[in-house]
Length: 230
Image 1 (cartoon, rainbow, N blue to C red):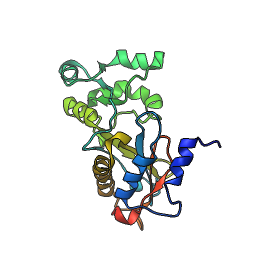
Image 2: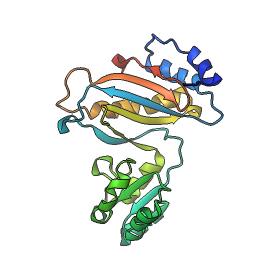
Image 3: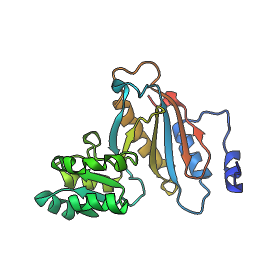
Image 4: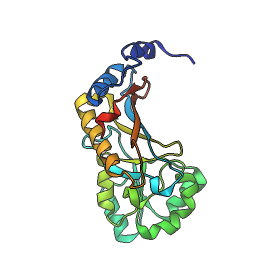
């Protein structure tokens, strides 16, 4: 696979056999981010869990103190007073059956987060097949099925991210942009790690976070010392 000159230059900054302390890795990932755009910094955790078992699943959401650096477009499924509340709180799109049909018929996905009031879940249930694979289906565990739509919208706009164990027992999350700098990225990273540690299932045995890699959108992965993540 062809690697560009910037990627090759970035790789030279990393010691392949070294496992870095979190602060060191975050400072380094900013140096290896060499693209012309402001790259997203992502964290990838390999967990000591077996997602095939319901009692070893982890899923939740956390508001990053410095946000994600991304403008978040929020779609809210609600009626009546809750719909008005959503508009006042700054939702980008508000509706019910009309938006369900728009998604179904027009393959419309100009949004990043979907929030719904509990009474709307029956209506949008038919969107499960299209929203589910994209990680957009509202869920009580992530706080996106709620009567307090204003709070959910504010959190989404402020930089709320969702973490969940995938089929390969990995958790992938963005923690900001390269332009944030190491200090702000570290604050976001520590908040995310704290939330994941707090979500540890009682059924989890042995090492909980087995591996951790930090990387920018176009850059190489940097291994993080997991003994510092407990």
